[in-house]
Image 1 (tube, rainbow, N blue to C red):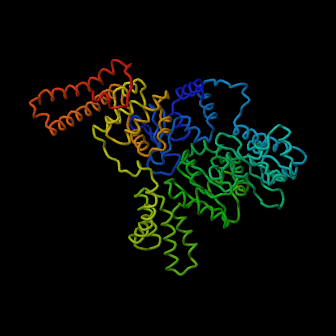
Image 2 (image 1 turned 90 degrees about the vertical axis):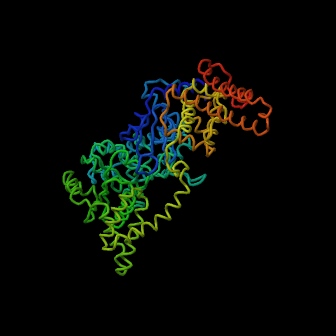
Length: 612
């Protein structure tokens, strides 16, 4: 990156507040903790907030899963944007105009492919309005979808033609590589190319920002498969996308609740009737990624799945996963073979919402009932044992001890068995699970927390001061030697800081994290010091004085002991030697004081000055 580009990036980062950006992206308030703000991590499942945002450093860091970076990284991770896209997004928020490079013709592959997907959606909607789309329009009318709804969701039509879309996109100048990468056209081999969606009503699938990232298609007639989604691409993953979330997020945030259904037709019907906090899975079970996104907006979920076997299996998988999250969860099952869109069409929105409230089954009650049903065919003893073991296994991701105990008590009560036996079964499963997880946790997470002593805090403040205050870094590097730091990790971290500084790099969290990525001790030290508030300039300066003074005191004692052991003091010159050593110690301390009056001192990382 050129110097001018780096300057623009720093200007954009400096113009936005990472706390505001994080609050907007997470959709939950961040809680102040000292100088930092904390929240539940959006990147992994947790009960206790370990996600930290530091406004002084303008960084985020999760002390649970290890994710961290600056405001650009945060936007890239949560919005799934490239670096240029995240930079442009933040620049627009800050009102900063980004310079164009050359003629501006270079566009990222991601931007080109998003453009193809958006064009494809427009092509499908155009085809829906043409004579060949008559059958699709008739089908949509039968489903009760009005013109406003069709337009709002961008519903379209794909004709029963193998290359209609491909040829249209080619005529518009798009390259094969980008067309195939979107998944809308498939290439089986070098000679076989075909449109994915054919003879189908086509529904765009959008990300949270409203970009089209894929499509779902419902076949017209009796063809198979009945429903077809875009394949997994770099832009589209069923594990992370919930249909309708771009439209439902704000409503769910206000209500504090999401309703989750099985497919896009049910979502569209709900929104048409004004039930606007409904989202749908896309042919896959609810995943941890889905749940982490939902938790950013609401703390309650209603699972609304069909009463058939497939719907019940989907509800079972989602309910078991949600049990581990601490969210409020209810399960509603539609009977008589009705789908949610059919119920809405017959009874309307008011009756639909009343039905949800009346028939909501509390999560654990639902899981107990379903476990009984699944194991009812066995003899009473083995059926009960297997049902209890299934329920206990569902708790293995619940870390909150009180929640676990309450649930285990309720399981025992539901089956009429001693709670001690149920807890023993849970403990047996948990011992195995805990042993497996402990080996994979970051060192800093596994290590017990403890208070740091004054010496450690001084070292932490010196390193934090060097990382956050350029003028202090210059002073610290001019007087500090590697042995002034006692902790191995902080030593190695300090070495990396000096290397970056000498190479002319700006000392930032991003640059130092990259520099220590392969150094386990230095990385653990960096994670640990980021838990502390940043010292002001005066506090950092005094900490530096104390660190160097301790080194001087230690050197004095070492040299005096050494001279005493080799007989030097027996010459009668002990007072002179002692005076000389004290002068060395005072010289060390004066070096620190002078550094704050004269910033032109040459930096060093050697011990040569310590022994002169």
